[in-house]
Image 1 (tube, one colour):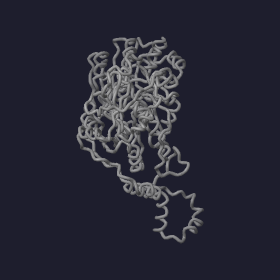
Image 2: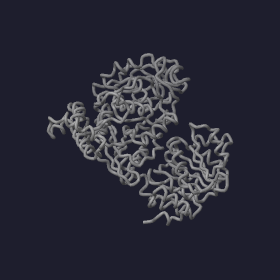
Image 3: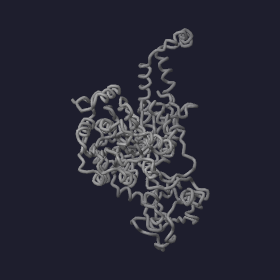
Image 4: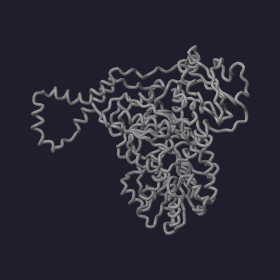
Length: 617
């Protein structure tokens, strides 16, 4: 077993390592640090989240730079401001014995003037998000023409977030002679492309196998009807009383909605997404690290800054659009040598995604049943028993014991135990005693599912919006769901043409759909929705008598709603609009719609619990 002393690090760094309590290097540190210290080379390092990548590039960079110079010698690009701040803090700890070291974090959401002043004082290392870095270079506030080292941290995530052009522009201002160190959890084609374009014969350091999941994380999936997804989430939480988890949703709107419903139901939860201010995000993360928050509901982008070693569960409330993103999600648990569990809540239509993920991470999922009400009651009961057993006695209570004994003297030991446990047990029992089975059976072929959808209970609709409006089938499906408030599986067989589209719902939703679309407008033009005679059995079919040109050609691309909707010409709304925000390619930035969140009050809770830590059994 190697030691940090054997990696070639100087004494000042070994002392910092000792202060931090590190004992032995991780595999990526063991492989990368000696290589980077002994050679001036480009490298591509593939290792899972939580394996110590920051130290793997941080110590070599700190040992190689000249702290007596005020020139910027190292640049580290990271995808989010949370990760940017985290890396900066860690580098300062690693270099605590380097007199004169100045590491500066550059990120959006903070004063660009203050950041410029910090740079002007002389920063040997800059840690930056691509957007703010490009902005400051463009304004002449930063000079990276003399850097010796450039690190692309979480490269796959930066590319997934659409930073390719920003990275290209930033690196064009750096010298070709620099060493580029690329660190990534996965190696999709985009990362290979950037490695070929910006790197010179890079050496590869791989920990484990490419794109596979962490060894100490188990993977489970639970199959439920889409409408029962939230109920399944609550049961999984209640079945694991000590849960300390990150719950992943695809969009900011879903993240906020799920967090609000959890808080309403008495769980100590919070949301973490891009619409929060930096101060709000800092407060949320501080509460999460101190375990005041037990369930952190987050988008994939916002979660990039989460660096907490004791997360017990990752719950995929919704699977990510990019299957590779699952690797990042599951890497939030099972860190620092601990074990973890990655849970996925899916509907029957998503079972194929599980098979795809298994191929990518090279691990098998275990199909599990959502616990029944009585199973949860049993687990909560014994959790309470163990909590009582492990509780240390506070002897400040001794003075009150005579009166307490007087109140309880008529009860036997067995009766007292029953009464103590009934205080908490009764709440869960009353809630779950009539709880239905949420599990559904899978295994049916996709064609069987489609055939069921197009039974006589299905209705097909025509809508005068299509690809020329910038809508692919998934975009249109999401927008229809937002307007109608239907579930994910309630809108299906969506076919988008150039200027119009079709979609299906169950017959029972017809009135709801027609009512929801009354007065909905697109750039001051009424959105036309009608029941189609076409049953939709063949994709690409159109209703009788309708031509391709219906709805008009040559319309400007934009969102839905009048000017009161999403701002200028963006937003899906009835007259006053449903909410606001520009559309972007990222699912995390999809349009949001105002309206009352569907709250749930079907969980036992006490008055005044709110978002506080709830009393568990």
